[in-house]
Amino acid sequence: MPIFAPYIEIPQLSDYRLVELAVEADPEAGWQYPDRELYKLLDPKVKAFVLVNPGNPSSVKIDEAGLAKISDIVTVDRRDLIILTDDVYATFADDFVSLFALCPENTILLYSFSKYFGATGWRLGTIALHENNVFDAKISALPEPDRKMLDERYRSLAVNPRALRFIDRLVADSRSVALSHTAGLSTPQQVQMALFALFALMDQRDAYKGAMKRMIRNRHQTLYRELGFDPPKDPNAVGYYTILDLEVLGARRYGRDFVDWLLRNKNPLEILFRLAEEGGVVLLPGKGFGTPHPSARVSLANLDEVDCARIGRIIRAIMQEYADEYQTAGRNSSQKGASRCS
Image (cartoon, rainbow, N blue to C red):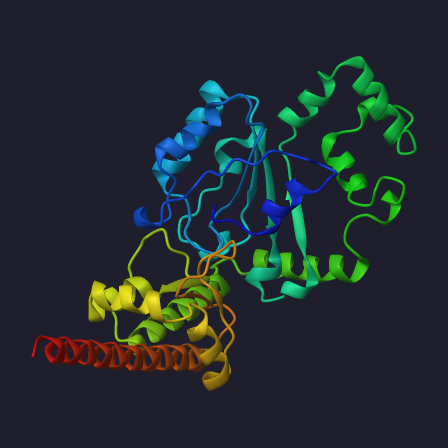
C-alpha cells in the first residue's frame, strides 16, 4: 500500500478468497517501505508479495536499500515467496532496477507499453517469468490429489498436462482454459506492440525516453511554480503522478492552525469539484481507499503544461480564499469574545 486498486479487489473475489496483509509504504520517508513492514514477508503464512514499482499513485521507485532488503528476505529466509511486480512506470524512472533482476526465480514481472507510449486503451501488457522458477517447482510438489485435479483441468491443452509450464497455464486461465485458443492479445494489438518494441530497439540513444522524462518534469515544475512553491526533490521520484497534499502545503504557507480550521470547516472534495467547474480539469483524490482528505493526484503524463499551470493557479487562489475566510472567522471570534468580556 498504496497500490493499484484492483490488486486489493481481486483477492476478495470468491474465486480466490485470499487473506490480505498490507505492507505499508511511509509517505514521511519518501514512500519507501520501512524494514518493520518488509519483515512481514518473513512470515511463512505470507505466500505472495504484490507491488507496483514505481508506486501507484506515489510514483516513486523503491530505493536501493529497500530492494536489497527484499532480495535478502527472499534469498535467505523465503526462497518460496512469490513476488508479483508491476513495473509499468519503470521507463519513466532514472537508473531503474526491477525485483525481476534481483529475485528472478521468484518473480512474475508485469509490464505494458501503454503508459510509455500514451496508449492506455490498447491494453498492451506482457508477463515475464524466469525459465527456472518457483511456480513450476510448487506445482510439481503438490499432493497427488491436487495434481490429478489439475490434470483434469488442463487435459484439453496437452497430452501430458503435467508437463505444462506455469506460464502456459496462466495464458489458458486468462480465458477459463476452455477458450484458451482465444487467449492473449488480438492481432491488431500484437502488431501495435511489435511496432512499439521495434521503435524502442531502434532508438538506441533513448531519445524518446529522454524527451518523455523532460516533458513530465517540466510539467511538474510548472505546476509548483504556479502554486508558489519549490517543487519537491526526490531522486527516487518518477513524476508520472504527483500528489498535492493541501494539508502539508497549507501548513507551510498559512500555518497549522489554518489547516486544522480547514479540515473542520471544508469538505475535502470541494477543491476537486471547483477545479472541474472553474478550470475544466478533473483530478482524482490524493488519498486512496475512499479516505476524505484535501489532496489531489495529478497525472503529469496526461495533462498539458498549460493544464498544469491552470491547476496551480486555481488551487493557489482557492487556498488564498480559504485563508481569507479563516482570518475573517478568527477576527469575528475575537470580537465576540471582547463583547462578552465587556
